[in-house]
Length: 121
Image (tube, rainbow, N blue to C red; front, side, top):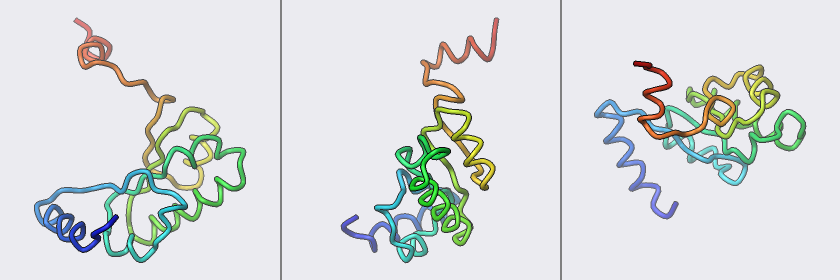
C-alpha cells in the first residue's frame, strides 16, 4: 500500500454509507498491527497459504492463532479462505474462526447451474 491515508479516507466514506469491508489475503507478511487498527476492517480474511495444511503445520498454526487474536482485538470477524479439507476447517473452527470459504463447501459454478441445483423445477 503506497497511500494509506487515501485508503483510510475511502474506507471511512464507505463506512459512513453503511458498507462493510474485508481485508483480503492477510497473513504474516501483512503484520502491521497499527495499520489494522487504523483501517478497522469489519472482516479479516486469512490467506489460504496459511489455511491449507494448518491442522498439521505448527508454523501455520502460529500465524493463524496470532491473526485470530488480532481480529478479535479489532472486533473484526475472522474468515479463513481456501478451506479444502475437513481437518483444516475443524482446526480453525475449534479455535474461533467464524466464517469460511473454499472448495470443501462447494466449487464455483455458473449461475444457471447453481439455480438448477438449489431451485429444481
